[in-house]
Amino acid sequence: MLATTNRAGGIPKVFEAVKPEIGGKAVALKANYNSADPYPASTHPDTLRALAGEIMDRDPASLSLLERSGMGSTRRVLGQCRVYEHLAPLGTDIIVLDDLPASGWRHIPRDGTHWKTGFFLPERLLSSGAVVQTCCLKTHRFGGHFTLSLKNSVGLVAKTVPGSAYDFMHELHSSPFQRQMIAEINRAYPVDLVIMDAMEGFVTGGPEDGERIAPGLLLGSRDRVAIDAAGIALLRSYGSTPEVMDGRIFSLDQIARAVELGVGCTDPREIDVIPLTGESRKDAETIARILQEEG
Image (cartoon, rainbow, N blue to C red):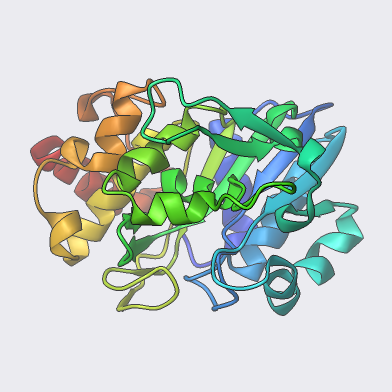
C-alpha cells in the first residue's frame, strides 16, 4: 500500500512490490469503464497510462484492454474517457466486448454456481498468459453493495452472445443472489495483479456518483479477496452505507462466496497490509486494525 498523490510515480512502485510475471506473455488488462462518468466512477486517465506503460516496459508479447460498459455503449464510453487516445501510442489492442462474435466467447458452465446456465467470458481473457486489473473504491447502490476488484469482473461477462437473445445482466441484476454470482465470476479466471486506485472514492451511492472521499492511496495485490477486504476496511474507516458497515467483513456476500470458491485468502488474519513508505504506515495500520477487529 502506498500513500501518494502521484499516480505516474506510485503505480510503478506498487507494481514492483507485487512483482507480476508478465514478460513475454499475452497480457489482458481490465480497467473500470462501466460508464463515462469521471473518476472515481471510472479509471483515472493517469492510472490507465501509468499501468499500461508499466506493463509495456516489461516486454509482454501483447497487451489487450478488454471492456464492456453497463451504463452506455462501450465504444462511446471508451471514446469519451479518451481510452483510445491514451492507449493507441502504446500499441495496445482495445477489445470492445459488445462487438465480439460468438466465437470470441467461452461458456463457463453453471457447476454449482447461482447462474442458471452459467455465463460467458472472452476467449482472449481465458487464453491470456497474465491478467492485470485496476479497480476503483466505490459503494454500489444497485445490489452489489460495493464495487471493488470482484465486482469489476462483471464488465468481462457477456450481456448477450450473438445468436441468442438471453440477457445475462438481467439475470444477474434481478437475482437475490447477485453478490454471490459476482464472486462466482472470479473463480473462472486468475489474476496476476490488481491495483486499486483509492486516491478518491465513493462511500455512498455508486457506481457512477456518490459522496466522495480522498484517502490518497494505491493498493496492490494478487489476491482479490484480500484487496477487497482491505478496500472495505478503508470504506469503513470513513463511514459508509449499512451494507458495507454492518457485520464481519468476511461475512459480506461477495467476500464470503469468493472465500468458499477459493478465489483468495480465507481469513483476515492472512492479510498483510504492507506500507511501501513511512508516509503510508498510518493508513496501513488503520486498515490492518479494522481487518483484525471487524474482519
